[in-house]
Figure 1: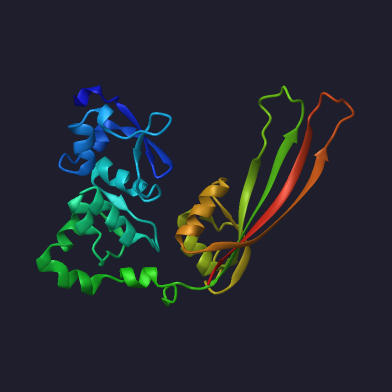
Figure 2 (figure 1 turned 90 degrees about the horizontal axis):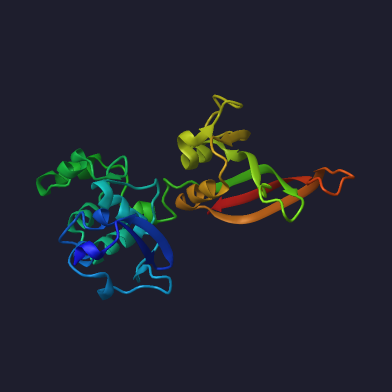
Amino acid sequence: RARSFPELVELNVGGQVYVTRRATLVSVPDSLLGRMFGQQSPSELSTDTKGRFFLDRDGFLFRYILDYLRDGNLVLPDYFRERAGLRREAEFFQLRDLARRLAPLVSKENSIGDEAQGEHEQEHDEGALASTSTTTTSSLNDPRSPSLKCGYITIGYRGSYTIGRDIQTDAKFRRVARITVCGKTSLAKEVFGDTLNESRDPDRPPERYTSRYYLKYNFLEQAFDRLAEAGFRMVACSSTGTCAYTSSDPNEDKIWTSYTEYVFCRE
């Protein structure tokens, strides 16, 4: 009966769509997913209107469940605020080892799944782990924690897009040349880490401000994810656009440039 499942399985988890291998879902045989996709048939499982297997659970946190199922390891982002919720999801999916590792104590690197972490989490080592841990779940979830500095970060990008003939299919609607980061140096490094390019303003002291950093990637959504995971929220944005090139030939595209800034705050 299990062979009737396709090798690649599409899931709708709380509205979020995931595609993974069936082998990943059954990697822990005694878990809920292991039984669903290892012992039941597709006709026994709920599906959405597009035929994807439906799970009425937290779609955002399910990404970490999948990460754990792939290789038994899981690395959480810095200042991860959903640890308790992720533990609840692990318990629902009957991933007992993951739920145990998501106990309130966390390691210095906020990493779950490596051998050293597993050893430290044994009962006879709990005291030692508590003495070496630098962060607890309560401090991560408490916005008043002194480890979470308040402040503003402004994300800016200069982009270009074309407006041309309707039949042109290869026109690039948004092309981001570079994403700049403005704000206090310590906050920028906390949020973006090694993805922050400091070459234009090296050796800037932590408590000084800069407007010359930029990111090593050009996906705005990736920057927004980092800020959200660090507890920031968007409070303002502004944008301007100008026509940089136009031609009297109606068959030629008009090229527009724009500059946009997004202001994020952590209170």
